[in-house]
Length: 230
Image (cartoon, rainbow, N blue to C red):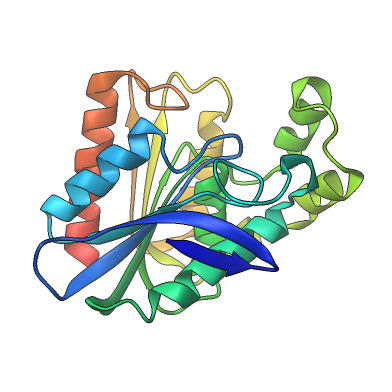
C-alpha cells in the first residue's frame, strides 16, 4: 500500500488475519533500517497468526519510500507515523484497537505518538533510547555523511521523557549486549512511563536482537503484551 506524507509517498505492507474484524499494530523501524527486515516480517507473521493485523512501512528516505535520508528529521518521521495511523483508521476489518511496536528510533517515535494519541492502547519498544543527544554526537563522528544541519538540530529538540507522564501499558525490551543504546536508557524510560508497564533485559540480545533465541524471546514477550492489552 502507498501512503502520502507531506508530498512524499511512503511504501507500506498490510498483513491481516484470515477473519475480520481485527486489532492493528503499526511496526516502526529504526534509523537506518526498513520495513522488510527479517524482524518486522517475523513480527507481522506471528501477529497475523494471533488474529492481529499489522502495518510495516518505510519512513521517508528509507527502504522504498520517497525522500532522501540526509533530508529527513525525527519530526518528519513522526509526521510519517501519524499519516500511517490516519490511513489505518479507514481500513476494512480494523476494529479500532491500536498498538505500536518500534525498535530503536522507531520505538522513540512510537512513544512520542503514544504521548499525544489516546487511541494507542499499548506500546512495545525494543532497544529504544530515552533521549537522542548521544545519538546526535555519535552520528556526527561516525554517522552517514551529509546529514543536514536541520537533522541534528531537530534530533536534539524532539525530547521524549517529559512527555511520558500519562503514557501507560508500555513493554520495554533491551539487550544486555546492546552496544549502541546503553541499558540506562531502558531504566529511564521505565521510570518515566506509568503502570501497567514492564521491563525485560535479555541477557544475550544485541541492539538488533540478531541472536535467534533472544529474538524469539522478544517476539513472544511482545505478543503476550499485545494480547493482554489489545
